[in-house]
Amino acid sequence: MRNKLFSLCLSLPIVISFFVTTLQQKRDPRKTDTGPSWADSQATSIGFSSRRSGHFNLYSKDLISGKIEQITSDTVDQHYPVWSPDGNWIAYQTVVDGNQEIFIRSTKSDQETNISNHPGRDGDDYPEWSKDSKSVYFTSRRNGNSDIFRKVIGKTGLEQITDDPADEMNPQLSPDGEQIAFARGGRGQFDIYIMKTDGSQLQQVTKSELPEMFPTWHPDGNTLIYQTRMTRSQADIFRINIDGSNEENITNSEGVEFYPRISPDGKKILYASPDDGDMDVYLLEIATGEITQLTN
Image (cartoon, rainbow, N blue to C red; front, side, top):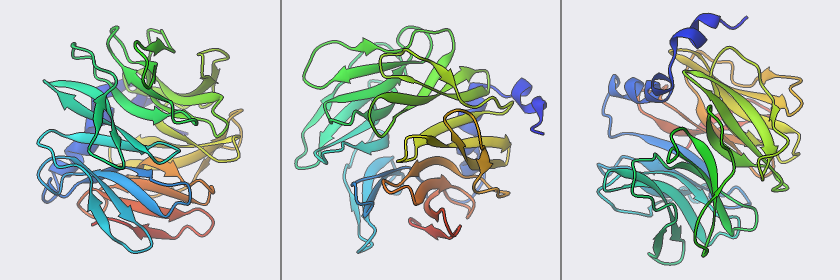
């Protein structure tokens, strides 16, 4: 049984900063590749954020040729790149005047736009594209706690999806674009929930006593993949049916696997791990359990 002690003593900053602390204790902290995502619908290329140039910038890797391309070259950190379904844009988080914002960047030029654009220190984070590539969902603390918002590209204003005392994080859209999976909670205790994109029909999926975050939808629309923090030195990738049944630990390792992203065909999972001493991106073949290190 999962130990309730951790849910009592962990806090949100500890949950998030644990991975940074792990990196600082091992080798060169510049050797950090994290926040992976799929960069095309054929799963032939990936995106990620890397500190290899001194600051976190956006990169892509062609999985066929092995070529890595640096997309941005900035002196402020950029995280969580997400390619739009039509392949024309990358949404990501960066910092402007000390405040986290969500930007979109053209894949065909250097055109960039700040789409969250708020003067306060509101922690805009975790962008996610709509299936028609016309909107970006993200989280923001502009109203005090972390809620989910939607920005329609080209229109003014934002739509606030959630308004709750709890924190909502890591929004991910279902394959049909009708539902959002996300992590909800606070003070170190997070569970996975789903709801309609308008915020209705809220449903709790996991009921663990340990933090569960970073959900991603299986293409079947009935299964979620997510990360569970087991101990200070262990985080595994799980899957569960959206009705809460058939929870299964996929990686079941003694190390740290986090930020999972399942492939469009549902056969592979990208994730980040510091288990070799530096944070790198890995690929897990679900059927065989074979693991391939993609960045180094």
